Length: 97
Image 1 (cartoon, one colour):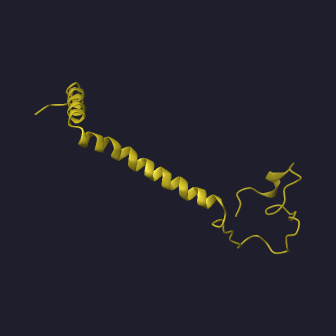
Image 2: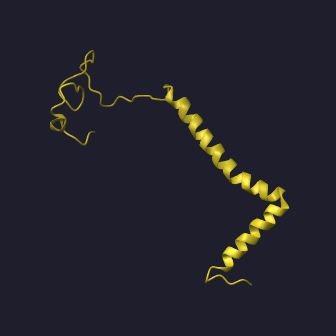
Image 3: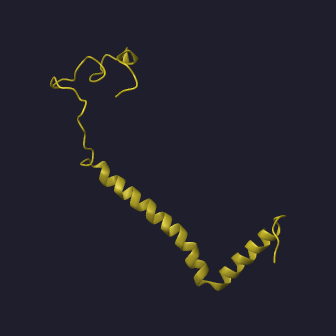
């Protein structure tokens, strides 16, 4: 199903296929409707998997690196939480108990 009719593609003489009345060279008389094109065999799927893997690993590393650094270095942890306490105390609605 298309959202544009053949009139929308006017002025483009090189276009072929549905919804236009001009068929592609070598195309049989049957229509493209009902055919499913399988894109999983393309080389792009391999690249897509690596992109998703690298994004996931980057996200995990971005969360774990600061956590591990604060867990392993007591002085950094103390400095960070002292800084966060100072920031929180400057917020008007914060009440330290």
